[in-house]
Length: 374
Image (cartoon, rainbow, N blue to C red):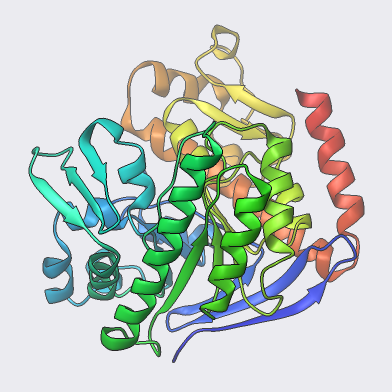
C-alpha cells in the first residue's frame, strides 16, 4: 500500500525509465505532472484527465490551506475523496507561493508569516505545519517547506536560504516521523542554493544525509537562462541517490523537457500548458500557435494536423479562435485538453524511446524541430 520507486532502465545519456508505485496507482517516469492548484486542473474534469492518461496531479498546499481548509478536506475523507481523483497526488509545501508574494510575507528561521491573498488574514507557516497540512490532505507525495529565492540572488542571500531550507527539512523529517504515516505518504526534500554551484553541492550533500525517500530540485525556472537551469540540475542530480526519484520543480517548456530527462530527472511540473491554454497559446509539433491571431479567422485546419486529440479531430482553428475572442468558457477547456495531450504525449514518446534505446535520436529530432519552429 505504500510508495516504492524503481529505475527500470538508464540510457547512456543519463535518462531514466522508472516506475513510482503509490497507494493510488503507478506513475510511469519520466512523468509530467499537471498542476491542479486548488484541487482542480483549470478547465478540465477529472474524467478528462483520466482520459488523457494523467497518472499524477499536483495540488497546492497554500491554496487548499486557505480554502476550503485542510481540516475540512480531512473530515471529507482526504483530497482524493474530496476532488474525486482516484490516482496519485503530489502536494507542494506552499514555499513557492509564499516566495511569490514578497509584499505579503516575512521569513524567519522559525517559519513564514504571511497575509492571505484572499482576505488579508495573518498566518504563520512552519515546517511542522506544512507537514500537518499535507498529512490532512492525504497526498501520496508531500514536500518539505523550503525557502525559494529570486534570480539573481547574492551568494550570501542564497547561502542563508539554503541553510534555512536544510534546517526546515530536518524539522520536517522529525515531525513526520512522529506524526506522519510513511506507509501512506512519502516526504521529499528540496535542494536549494540559487545558481551558486558550491551552495547546491553543499545543500544536496546535507539533504542526502537525511535519507528521505526522494529529492526535488527547487529554485530554478525563476528567470535564469535554460543553460544555467541545466547546469545546476546536472550538478545536483549527480549527487542524488540513483535509486530514489528526482523531481525538478516548475519546468518546463516542451523543447526543454528532453534536456531535463537526459539529466536524470524523473518528475516535472509546470503551469505552462494550462496557463498558456487559457491565454490562447497552443503547443503544436510546429511550435506555438497564438489562436487569437486574425490569420486563423477562416482557417479550417485543426490546431495541429499531426495531433490525435479529440480537439484536433473535431474543431477548426477558426472555431477555436471564435470561442477565444468571444470569451466562451469552452475555449479554455478545449485549449487545455489539447495542450495537456501534447505534453503527456511527449513524455510517453520519451519513455518509449528510452525503453527502445533510441532516446538520443528522439532528443535530436525534437531539438531540430524546435530549432526550426523558433
